[in-house]
Length: 276
Image (cartoon, rainbow, N blue to C red):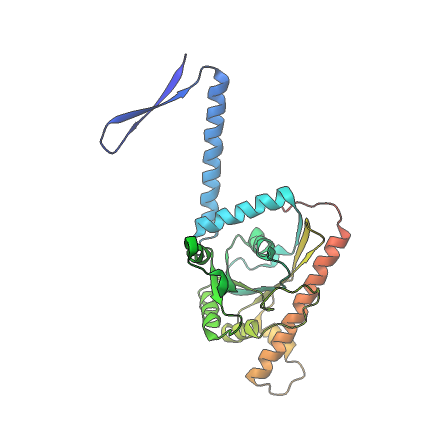
């Protein structure tokens, strides 16, 4: 019987021997293949960590991203349109409609597929519970809390700080999930962030076609100057409040447009299309 000894020294200095049985050449080949596969996976994970280095725990973010991507490819018919519009560098705000609990999976994939960047995401404070370190893990992947009943300036300040540091910030301006296809109303938080940072805006819409079909559409990124001019067109010397209200209405309209594009993509592509 042939064997292959891998000698290794422990902390006491003694040599330990790990014996890998290789009675047949096929077994040796399978072992080498498995070792090579493990190496490739580890190497790929290090690449992912470098890509998602903007968040506190890039390794955890990479693991969640890869797991979501693999599960989506295997189980769902998910389509993405316009992911290349997400800025590949610099601070920016990304917004979307909010329909289901699983929205962050698809919006997160759409944000990172082409840009290869992680995004800080504003999430309801009820999720940040100390049980089993859930709050620390959420913080690690870039989530930060907001009180939906009293969305004060603290969460807005935190979002602005991330953008000013050159990071992406993602938020659902509706503040909660909606069962309706129409974006009836959104809060002024997104407009407040834009007016404070003058950051560019990326708008996406998500739509579902049953349990196993989903689509996301991302619009070309617009600069703050373009958005402000478009929102305040026809207003004479608008105040800061007027600008925020006008921007809020414009953002709601753009989200609704992208949601419609996502619906049309589902209607026009009935066959499963894997995420590329």
